[in-house]
Figure 1: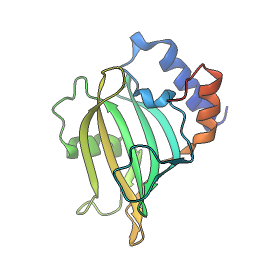
Figure 2: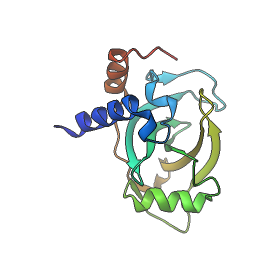
Figure 3: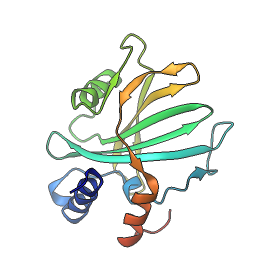
Length: 163
């Protein structure tokens, strides 16, 4: 089984057994165009690059979106807040980095942000943003991603509606 097939198998497991896991960010069911000219708050459109999914602490899923805008590439991890509602940005970075999802190259200047958000079903998540790089340099190692067209095809085959 390829690594991509393992991720699809995990998505299927999370979708068919929701009572066993904390909620997965509803972005995992979304269709991602190459370029998103939607609700941009930046001067440039967002470019969707890749995704990934996994589990922390046994039943806590994470969903990763890699995207770029204004010359900056960003990893955004979505993690359910249940049981860790009071985690700080540093706690969240330590959790993700401790799971070996990425490594910040300059811990003194991590270029990270975290905030709480809500998905379309009212589930609360942390949105943890890590700047991968910009025209000045690279700040992170890791953050394995898969192409969005593969996820889009998977979601179309599972009755995903275009959001």
